Amino acid sequence: MPDASRHAPKPRRVTQGERTPKPSRTPQAAPRRAEGSVDEGGIADVIGPVVAAAGMDLESVRVTAAGRRRLLRVVVDSDRGVSLDDAAAISRQLSGALATVAVMGDFPYTLEVSSPGVDRPLTDPRHWRRAAGRLVQVTVTDGGQSEAISGRVVAADSDGVILEVGEVRRRFGYAALGAGAVQVEFGHPQTELGATRDGH
Image: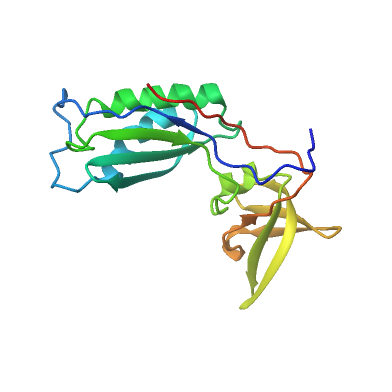
Protein backbone atom coordinates (compact mmCIF):
# COMPACT_ATOMS: atom_id res chain seq x y z
CA MET A 1 0.00 0.00 0.00
CA PRO A 2 1.46 3.40 -0.87
CA ASP A 3 2.83 5.40 2.02
CA ALA A 4 3.78 8.98 1.35
CA SER A 5 5.95 9.14 4.45
CA ARG A 6 8.14 6.13 3.82
CA HIS A 7 11.89 6.47 3.40
CA ALA A 8 14.16 4.65 0.98
CA PRO A 9 13.85 0.87 1.49
CA LYS A 10 16.84 -0.65 3.23
CA PRO A 11 18.24 -4.15 2.76
CA ARG A 12 16.96 -6.57 5.36
CA ARG A 13 19.37 -8.87 7.16
CA VAL A 14 19.61 -12.13 9.02
CA THR A 15 22.64 -12.46 11.25
CA GLN A 16 24.02 -15.68 12.65
CA GLY A 17 25.84 -15.48 15.96
CA GLU A 18 29.62 -15.49 16.13
CA ARG A 19 31.08 -18.81 15.07
CA THR A 20 34.47 -20.36 15.61
CA PRO A 21 35.46 -22.41 12.57
CA LYS A 22 35.65 -26.15 13.18
CA PRO A 23 38.42 -28.39 11.88
CA SER A 24 37.86 -29.47 8.31
CA ARG A 25 35.99 -32.74 7.85
CA THR A 26 36.44 -33.04 4.08
CA PRO A 27 39.51 -33.78 1.99
CA GLN A 28 38.54 -30.91 -0.34
CA ALA A 29 38.89 -28.30 2.41
CA ALA A 30 40.85 -25.19 1.48
CA PRO A 31 44.35 -24.97 2.97
CA ARG A 32 44.94 -22.80 6.00
CA ARG A 33 45.56 -19.24 4.93
CA ALA A 34 48.10 -16.74 6.19
CA GLU A 35 47.36 -14.67 9.29
CA GLY A 36 44.92 -11.86 8.50
CA SER A 37 43.94 -13.33 5.14
CA VAL A 38 40.48 -14.58 4.14
CA ASP A 39 39.73 -15.70 0.58
CA GLU A 40 36.42 -14.15 -0.53
CA GLY A 41 36.63 -16.02 -3.83
CA GLY A 42 37.02 -19.31 -1.98
CA ILE A 43 34.03 -18.48 0.19
CA ALA A 44 31.94 -17.74 -2.91
CA ASP A 45 32.96 -21.11 -4.38
CA VAL A 46 31.68 -22.86 -1.25
CA ILE A 47 28.40 -21.01 -0.77
CA GLY A 48 27.52 -20.35 -4.42
CA PRO A 49 26.08 -23.84 -5.06
CA VAL A 50 24.08 -23.65 -1.82
CA VAL A 51 22.55 -20.32 -2.84
CA ALA A 52 21.81 -21.60 -6.36
CA ALA A 53 20.15 -24.75 -4.97
CA ALA A 54 17.82 -22.48 -2.99
CA GLY A 55 16.75 -20.77 -6.21
CA MET A 56 18.62 -17.54 -5.50
CA ASP A 57 21.49 -15.55 -6.98
CA LEU A 58 24.67 -14.80 -5.03
CA GLU A 59 25.14 -11.05 -5.53
CA SER A 60 28.22 -10.43 -3.38
CA VAL A 61 30.50 -11.77 -0.66
CA ARG A 62 32.44 -9.41 1.55
CA VAL A 63 34.59 -9.96 4.63
CA THR A 64 35.48 -7.14 7.00
CA ALA A 65 37.79 -7.36 9.99
CA ALA A 66 37.69 -6.03 13.53
CA GLY A 67 40.72 -7.42 15.34
CA ARG A 68 40.48 -11.20 15.40
CA ARG A 69 36.81 -11.15 14.50
CA ARG A 70 35.43 -11.24 10.98
CA LEU A 71 32.05 -10.16 9.62
CA LEU A 72 31.05 -12.18 6.58
CA ARG A 73 28.39 -10.31 4.59
CA VAL A 74 26.53 -12.31 1.95
CA VAL A 75 23.99 -10.62 -0.34
CA VAL A 76 21.43 -12.81 -2.13
CA ASP A 77 18.46 -12.05 -4.35
CA SER A 78 15.78 -13.77 -6.42
CA ASP A 79 12.95 -12.88 -8.77
CA ARG A 80 10.47 -13.32 -5.92
CA GLY A 81 12.52 -11.21 -3.51
CA VAL A 82 13.98 -12.40 -0.20
CA SER A 83 11.53 -12.92 2.64
CA LEU A 84 12.26 -13.38 6.34
CA ASP A 85 11.86 -17.14 6.01
CA ASP A 86 14.05 -17.23 2.89
CA ALA A 87 16.83 -15.29 4.60
CA ALA A 88 16.68 -17.38 7.77
CA ALA A 89 16.73 -20.65 5.82
CA ILE A 90 19.64 -19.72 3.55
CA SER A 91 21.56 -18.36 6.53
CA ARG A 92 21.32 -21.73 8.29
CA GLN A 93 22.35 -23.58 5.13
CA LEU A 94 25.34 -21.33 4.50
CA SER A 95 26.45 -21.63 8.11
CA GLY A 96 26.39 -25.41 7.78
CA ALA A 97 28.33 -25.35 4.51
CA LEU A 98 31.01 -23.04 5.90
CA ALA A 99 31.45 -25.27 8.95
CA THR A 100 32.76 -28.07 6.73
CA VAL A 101 35.64 -26.17 5.12
CA ALA A 102 38.49 -23.91 6.17
CA VAL A 103 37.93 -20.87 3.96
CA MET A 104 37.52 -18.61 7.00
CA GLY A 105 40.84 -19.74 8.42
CA ASP A 106 41.11 -19.75 12.20
CA PHE A 107 39.07 -16.59 12.66
CA PRO A 108 35.83 -16.50 14.66
CA TYR A 109 33.20 -14.84 12.48
CA THR A 110 29.63 -13.64 12.24
CA LEU A 111 27.58 -14.47 9.16
CA GLU A 112 25.17 -11.80 7.88
CA VAL A 113 22.80 -12.61 5.02
CA SER A 114 20.89 -9.75 3.38
CA SER A 115 18.99 -8.77 0.26
CA PRO A 116 20.19 -5.93 -1.97
CA GLY A 117 19.26 -2.39 -1.00
CA VAL A 118 17.74 0.21 -3.29
CA ASP A 119 21.25 1.60 -3.89
CA ARG A 120 22.42 -1.58 -5.64
CA PRO A 121 23.59 -0.60 -9.17
CA LEU A 122 21.66 -2.19 -12.03
CA THR A 123 24.38 -3.89 -14.05
CA ASP A 124 23.03 -7.32 -15.05
CA PRO A 125 19.85 -8.26 -16.94
CA ARG A 126 18.40 -9.82 -13.78
CA HIS A 127 18.90 -6.54 -11.89
CA TRP A 128 16.93 -4.63 -14.53
CA ARG A 129 14.22 -7.30 -14.64
CA ARG A 130 13.76 -7.09 -10.86
CA ALA A 131 13.54 -3.30 -11.08
CA ALA A 132 10.39 -3.43 -13.22
CA GLY A 133 8.09 -0.57 -12.23
CA ARG A 134 10.92 1.43 -10.68
CA LEU A 135 12.08 4.88 -11.74
CA VAL A 136 15.78 4.74 -12.64
CA GLN A 137 18.50 7.04 -13.85
CA VAL A 138 21.07 5.77 -16.30
CA THR A 139 23.63 7.07 -18.78
CA VAL A 140 22.94 5.96 -22.35
CA THR A 141 25.73 6.01 -24.95
CA ASP A 142 24.76 6.07 -28.61
CA GLY A 143 27.08 6.89 -31.51
CA GLY A 144 29.74 8.20 -29.15
CA GLN A 145 27.28 10.59 -27.47
CA SER A 146 26.29 10.07 -23.84
CA GLU A 147 23.02 11.18 -22.29
CA ALA A 148 21.75 10.84 -18.71
CA ILE A 149 18.08 9.93 -18.73
CA SER A 150 15.44 9.09 -16.15
CA GLY A 151 12.70 6.61 -16.93
CA ARG A 152 10.56 3.88 -15.46
CA VAL A 153 11.52 0.28 -16.17
CA VAL A 154 8.68 -1.29 -18.15
CA ALA A 155 10.36 -4.61 -18.93
CA ALA A 156 13.76 -6.24 -19.37
CA ASP A 157 14.91 -9.34 -21.20
CA SER A 158 18.22 -10.92 -22.14
CA ASP A 159 18.92 -8.27 -24.81
CA GLY A 160 17.83 -4.97 -23.31
CA VAL A 161 15.45 -2.78 -21.37
CA ILE A 162 12.28 -0.86 -22.17
CA LEU A 163 12.12 2.45 -20.31
CA GLU A 164 9.18 4.81 -20.20
CA VAL A 165 10.77 8.25 -20.60
CA GLY A 166 8.13 10.89 -20.14
CA GLU A 167 5.22 9.42 -22.08
CA VAL A 168 7.39 7.60 -24.61
CA ARG A 169 8.60 4.02 -24.31
CA ARG A 170 12.14 3.51 -25.56
CA ARG A 171 14.16 0.31 -25.86
CA PHE A 172 17.89 0.22 -25.07
CA GLY A 173 20.36 -2.62 -25.52
CA TYR A 174 22.57 -3.37 -22.52
CA ALA A 175 25.68 -2.37 -24.48
CA ALA A 176 24.38 1.20 -24.54
CA LEU A 177 23.52 1.37 -20.85
CA GLY A 178 25.74 2.29 -17.96
CA ALA A 179 24.98 1.14 -14.42
CA GLY A 180 21.41 2.12 -13.61
CA ALA A 181 20.47 3.70 -10.28
CA VAL A 182 17.01 3.26 -8.76
CA GLN A 183 15.50 6.59 -7.72
CA VAL A 184 13.73 6.98 -4.40
CA GLU A 185 10.05 7.84 -4.83
CA PHE A 186 7.99 8.87 -1.85
CA GLY A 187 4.52 7.43 -2.07
CA HIS A 188 5.54 4.67 -4.49
CA PRO A 189 4.75 1.12 -3.29
CA GLN A 190 7.70 -0.71 -1.78
CA THR A 191 8.66 -3.81 -3.73
CA GLU A 192 11.65 -5.12 -1.78
CA LEU A 193 11.08 -8.02 0.59
CA GLY A 194 13.23 -9.21 3.43
CA ALA A 195 13.58 -9.37 7.16
CA THR A 196 15.98 -9.22 10.05
CA ARG A 197 16.54 -11.92 12.62
CA ASP A 198 19.09 -12.30 15.37
CA GLY A 199 21.34 -15.29 14.89
CA HIS A 200 22.06 -17.94 17.49
